[in-house]
Length: 103
Image 1 (cartoon, rainbow, N blue to C red):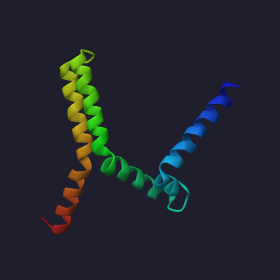
Image 2: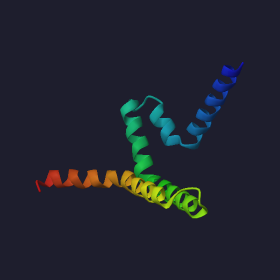
Image 3: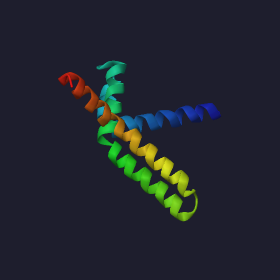
């Protein structure tokens, strides 16, 4: 009975996600394949949502440090990792454009 409930919860969450994000649903429909789906997902996470995800994450971590739930050393580490993680696509695009121009 527990497995049946888990399956129904998973299917419900998947359906809501597909309805909430039609571009993901279109990519997952098989029209573009798995590679196109992953490209669209990466583009959405890094380029469209990344700025807001990073700001929200940094805000939560800074609040946790201010409230005493985290040491400031760890707050700094997480902050640097978030900035680096979301800056990687810009860095790669810069390298790609430099390589195409021949330095």
